[in-house]
Image 1 (cartoon, helix red, strand yellow):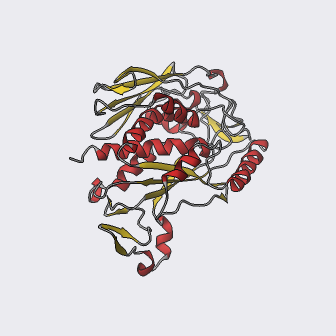
Image 2 (tube, rainbow, N blue to C red):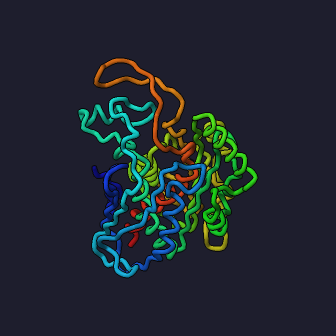
Image 3 (tube, rainbow, N blue to C red):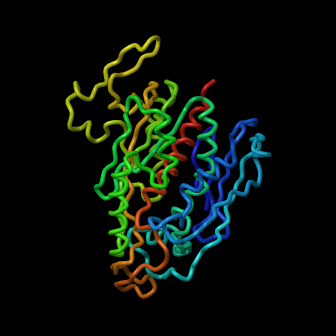
Length: 358
């Protein structure tokens, strides 16, 4: 299985949750870019499973094996090929005859005529976001050299809400501070309440979802284009490629539907020779094109569908209704692990557009 993203930077992700390895191929990275591999490993650790009680007990080191494209930490101009070994799989935990509610088991069964790999979700698993973090982490480092910085945090988990980024004056120092935390929130006290919600769901054999807020600062104006070339559309395509994402909104998003035009419009002003806006309901995008203000968006993450509670399903072989409990090791909440994934995808999409400049 291979999924592709990008035009100038062509990204392919391959593998399944329980295959021997998973990986990414990226064509279009310029030669000469120096990558801090230790920093990239730390970025990968933020997404990796088995780090604390809030994630799955599956433990994967997620060590990157570069096959081509990088030499001694420097991009060499060849297609980048990197893989990660799957070392802690328990395929016997999965009943391949009963599709799990909330998963892609049944729709994949329809599409692939029963030949899909249902173990751990196969190619539809969140496990495939690990290779995305490889290429996204590289793009983040390349774009930081251009003064572009990426931030994200768990804005909400099961109704418990964190502070929001300042849509007008968000600083890279806050991004870094959140990235370095074990639990990615701005307000640690609210983070404790989120953890309590996750613990409560886990103890009840259930799961919870939430909202991730992302922001990008330092973007030049002019990235994107009209209609189908808009940056919103490109980002939405990438973000919806992340399993469990069920919605996305930019700037004020759906709240804009409640406003008057006079409230929603962001007035312009000159700051020296730079045009800025007093507010940022547009989220840094007008007509699908960046205007130099921070890019802001939020993505809704559904509750982890694998839960210990008894659920209704069907037996595909017997063609009859049944009830069952999902076995295996699963996250009671994936929001906190998905935070770096959304940063990675955002960086990859923006770097793809950034390559159009000049």
